Image (cartoon, rainbow, N blue to C red; front, top):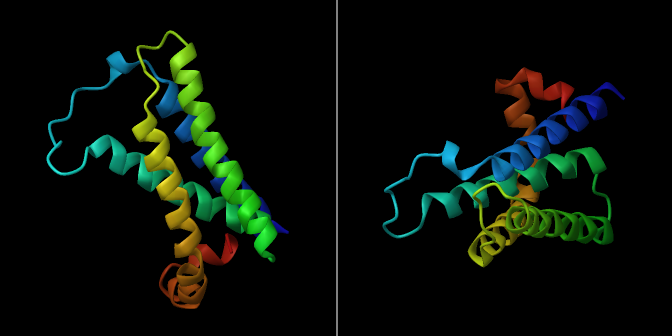
Length: 135
């Protein structure tokens, strides 16, 4: 029971982090100049949604494929909702289809990463004992 509470807290905090960072006024960010092959912004979206999917999968306790795909749908829908909010709120942010694509790819990557993380969990718990409280 305690493990689920810790997992819920971690997943909720990560979700709030995505929400806040996505809805902060654009004027608060400095321009990045790392736009060579891939925009740093898209990489951040990819990573945030990969972690989002993995954390929430620990909370939900994925046991069936249907639950896994429901979580994937929720993750993608959350990314789309954030982009719609950015377009409709006066935050200096804008709707970008590329962000939705990066969010979706990140969520799918989280889906494919999940079996690897679950296989590695005993090793991770050995070196990072606090994970015993999460998963």
